[in-house]
Image 1 (tube, helix red, strand yellow):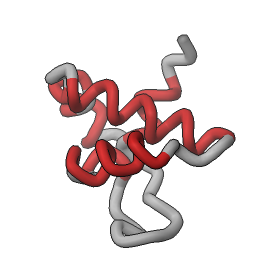
Image 2 (cartoon, one colour):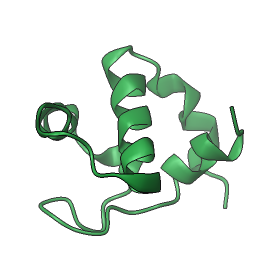
Image 3 (spheres, one colour):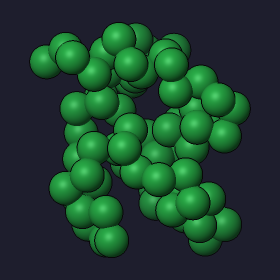
Length: 71
């Protein structure tokens, strides 16, 4: 796995929708569950949203806390 993937989750903002301009790591799990049910978008954004979804539903958000202060 590319170590930059987690760093991107705390730096990149949602480009559209209800949570436009919110950091990907700060998107609520209920919205990620909804997106999961509809299908994540294709490409890099879809991979990022899928990753943050897996992190949140598995209680692994603590992995992102040390990265939030970087950048």
